[in-house]
Image (cartoon, rainbow over all chains, first blue to last red; front, side, top):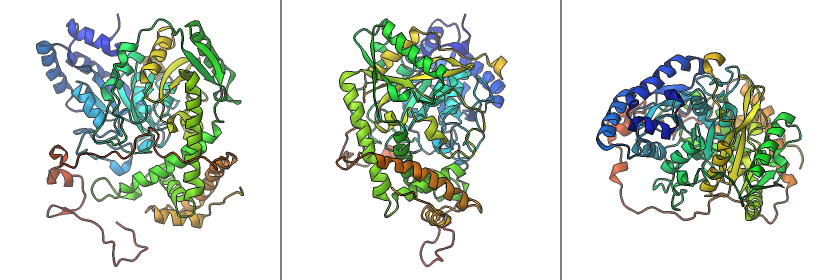
Length: 474
Length: 108
């Protein structure tokens, strides 16, 4: 029989319904796991001091009305860049140390309205500027598969919380890889909705033209349930779409992928990629064929150009967004910014400065158009494109030292889809050196249902969705 | 395109524009790192974009406006709005002087 921390959302609800355990039991179980393992993993920056009281209220609701909310009594971890009233929010930066939000972010508000309980806030790269969680001002998070390894980032704390099974589900956000890359390195499942599918209000801004909140969880089914909850028009974010939100979980459970066309991106099998990583991607292509899909090679622009586009767009938008941290209305003074944050603000200030704007910012946005056009061309014929998420497995702690372009190199395979605002699932597709490798399944804008359907069918027909025995690894 | 060198004087100027203070070794270190980064960005010039428009907004939305009404639910009570500020006076934020000040002085 599964232990409480191993249960998916549906299984938790089944347990509540059959009175096998209560919400208080489940929350207590997770809190004791957090007490035991968090000191070694450094996942949680702040804890919700009222979680048990909230669980008791939910138990009462279940007893009286049953389960009529999608996430009722589901313990969740929230990335620390989402404003949460009553739980301090820092974006892992000293400049916000001790900050208590005055309002709730749109997506966390939706999770709460759906009945979720937040157990705490998770570590991340400071201001989400990175792909390691090592640039956090509060120390790195450790990878549950091997604590000498990085969890990836920027949503590294949320991904590690799922891998170590310290919560049922988690919330992350992606600007270019910040969900897919840490879920790849931690061997869990994540989902990046289309840009504008879930609201950014109350999510501390990084690059406003690509920031996308999204879930991290144990299974594709769980991320589909959460994506449905957090999606939709946000009256406080003008870039959200008013397209109807589909009932994503209802599409899942397909036994084959007959009739679907999948493109294997040739350029994403990088020349210097390890053969064993390449093999896992080619194996997954073979798996899709055996499930009835047609898989063919497709071609995109050399991903090295995506690094240039993303670097300019991200730095420029960061320099503008982080100008608001003046230490007057909230937070501390600008000398509390960490080195990586300063570097990014300054490079963005440079690329936007008089005389350089056309050469850098406008040029990058034109190349971005070309990338969008290439994807549009591919999606005329193909339902999805696949490739590795990251060039290799988790790197060791310290790998980011003196590597100002670390994040961009690690995210080389996910930057194009991010700057194009596409939707993409990240699922485990095998192991090398005892560390997980992740596969991305990327679809056109607002094709969440399709990306989730394909990822779900793949996950149900493979055995890579595993969790480390942290009593042994830590 | 010729290689662009970002000098430590450039870095100092950028820091001023960005309202950031540099630590003593940062101007030199950042100059080297920015030169490398700009070199990598300049690879984009290998791609011809002469007839390609720039994309600033990717999901096609434009001219989105909200109703011109006050949303009382979103208004913060004064004490909540001021709660996180270090310096307040009589229900106001205290801001640093920005006029008639020595330009080189720290702004806060």
